[in-house]
Length: 223
Image (tube, rainbow, N blue to C red; front, side, top):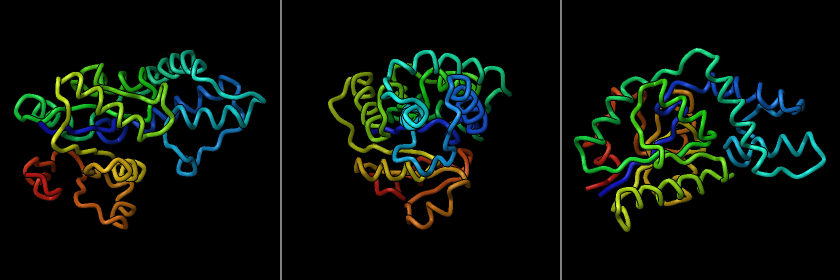
């Protein structure tokens, strides 16, 4: 059995705008007035790590994970007040196809906090198992999030290991994470296409309507 690990924002759901609006507004409501919104400058592109860095730049005390619970709830409320999230073209059909018509296992690894991630997938109509979705609530690094997603998938599908693992994401940080973990990668979307080109990735798609599993396996060298 093989595994595909999906990022969520701008990979399966068209949700970056809603996410960032709610995220920044929540930080401001919780008293973080000095916020660095140049997300590419952060060592780890996750909600928890970016929140930690900004928290410690605003308050004279170290960040603790228990701060996230109330923050996450308020952020979720704000996302629900915005325009509903939609799918990246073809995402729902593709997920259903992989789940029902192939021998691929599926899991989700996102830099987002969990509750907002559930809202985004639900609004976009994408089917998922909650126990297969790992967010950044207790993990700062994307490598740790993806690795935990792989471990959760092993438990859910009752296997000791996967023959091949593919990570799919829209950001250069997703590519770097996959390389650090030694797993395959597929890039999606046009926002970071120039970065992907420079890195000579093996496969890039604009949206899920373009995705063909057999072509992906061939490009990645999966038999």
